[in-house]
Amino acid sequence: MSGGIILSRRGLIRAGALGAGGLLLSGCDRLNSSPGFRAVLESGEDLHKASQRLFGRDALAREYAPSEMSPVFRANGSREVADAAYRALLAQGFAPWTLRVDGLVARPLALPLAALRALPQRQQITRHDCVEGWSAIGKWQGPRLAHVLDLARLRPEARYLVFHCADRIGGAPYYESIDLVDAFHPQTILAWRMNDRPLDEAHGAPLRLRVERQLGYKQAKYVMRIEARATLAGLYGGKGGYWEDSSGYAWYAGI
Ligand SMILES: Nc1nc2c(c(=O)[nH]1)N[C@H]1C(S)=C(S)[C@@H](COP(=O)(O)O)O[C@H]1N2
Ligand SMILES: [Mo]
Image (tube, rainbow, N blue to C red; front, side):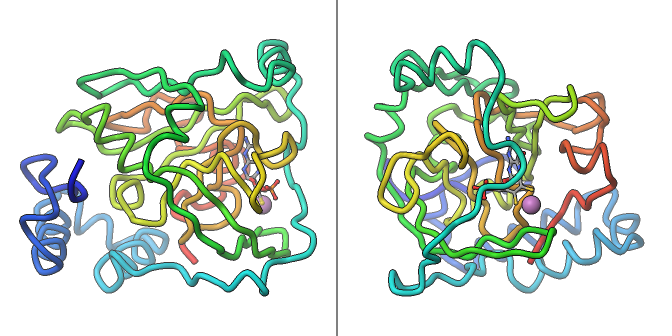
């Protein structure tokens, strides 16, 4: 596969033919043509998002040197998963596990870990910031989410990617979601490796999202399924994530 793919009003197009100017134009184009643009600017959270999008759509999160990696990277939220099917997969080293990619895609996928490892890999050393007041610098490796979406062929109606996780908190399933700008950002990866080792259970084995320009709770662990959707309405509490639904955390948690 050559080049990346990006969103335009007409759907997905190859980035190679456009260059950076084209990327920027298609971003502004998309915002301005969106019927809700004015309404979007009226809320504080969306203003934050809009300004990050207009002025730094493709800006990269800072990456660090190996010497700056935290000696300890704490685990937070779920550290173990109770689900019986998950425990059976863990016991088998996730050999029978597949990542399901479905919803608004032309080609639903079931990708084993070996397939994710065989895709071109990205490695990045970044800082994870949790709203609870701690940070840690770690190294992440995996394929770009963009690459997986390219294989699944998003349909033009798709606007969000939902990450369905294996764990529950207080009975409610953990889930998270991002929009297509973050989905196709170069640092957005499906990490199966952390600090040069396969992810352990505490940090989200076998696969987690790294969406580096957002806060810790967006970094979904134990990702079992990625669902492409046109809207977040009608899904659990409708706010696009476990913490968004349960505690009013911002959906767009840009840093
Ligand atoms: N599935 C799932 N993903 C999750 C959580 C969780 O409880 N379950 N906690 C979130 C929060 S609040 C943080 S800070 C990070 C913690 O990641 P870590 O355990 O690797 O430090 O994962 C995020 N992703
Ligand atoms: Mo967090």
